[in-house]
Picture 1 (cartoon, protein in one colour):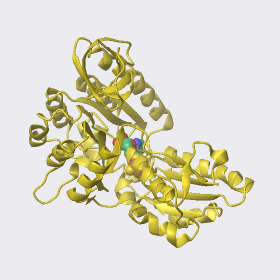
Picture 2 (tube, protein in one colour):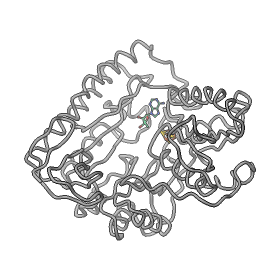
Picture 3 (tube, protein in one colour):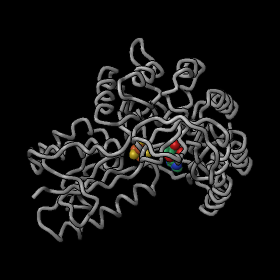
Picture 4 (cartoon, protein in one colour):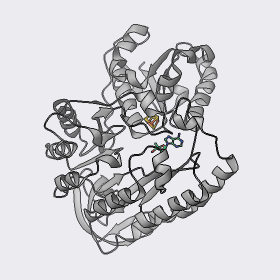
Length: 409
Ligand code: 5AD
Ligand code: SF4
């Protein structure tokens, strides 16, 4: 009987893509994917360490796997990703039943790690998982910034860009496999470059591949949103009109202490330019950075209003070992809770409002099921008629309930 693989992924889209990549190696070794832990023979826990909470969840899941492993002989556990990279081999002391630790930086050598541990011999059978409209393509890894709160640069290492030839071949392959939407991935995705080629050139080239209807990318850094970038993408409708642009704070003083490399005003300028090209903008915000005063926090609140984000993911500041901000005295948990609460209340209505704005406007929908798809600016839309999955429908939005757009056709 075929062995079964269960994958538990924490963290960002990058991790989802890495999970897919690890899965494809194991599918090539005779495993089949399962969504039921009870029937699995192998579990991969792909972890995140960006906040203490994320790491904690992964470790407590790993703790529960002790019993799971005891229940049936021949079960295995692989612990992968960013927390695995940070904690390394010392994990095996606390969790002696772990079979393999594979840090985020080792993803390129995952196959040889599998070989060298000897537990997962090659076997025929299995085929890549082809569900979903979106094909993920990693274009760069790592981060050359040094934001004072962030552990990613130390965990994922400096920037390494993949060659455009390889990226285009990968994207073409995904499109051929039936993914009309290509999502380009990297920790600072728009830092990608190559001699004579910019990130915008790459977006245009990927969008021109046969079978590609739409190109998205995540996560960009505001530093590389320039007039040149916008000039190069604004006439290409296949480049999705949504960008997830982490602001982190609305206070120029805090942004400086975070070493983000921009002020509130610079960010608002970039946001205005993106909006002029039709982009919807979602963001990440951190509350309770060590030096954040009431006044700084209120500037984050007014940024939310002024910027008109379509969504905001809000996080309580979490000190990460080895980062400069972790040396600073912390604000009290009570203050963090209060500020998070206030911010969450402010951002709650954003999506509903952003949906409402579409009424009466044209929409281009990439169908993910016969009656449902996503607009270029990343809103869910329900169509009146049925369409082929993967096709692009041009219509007009006639109504919205705040979570869904309804179209004329
Ligand atoms: N504490 C809280 N949030 C953080 N993020 C990154 N590091 C921290 C931290 N130490 C948030 C940022 C980032 C998102 C992925 O996680 O908002 O954009
Ligand atoms: Fe988590 Fe960041 Fe690593 Fe993604 S890159 S898994 S968010 S630590």
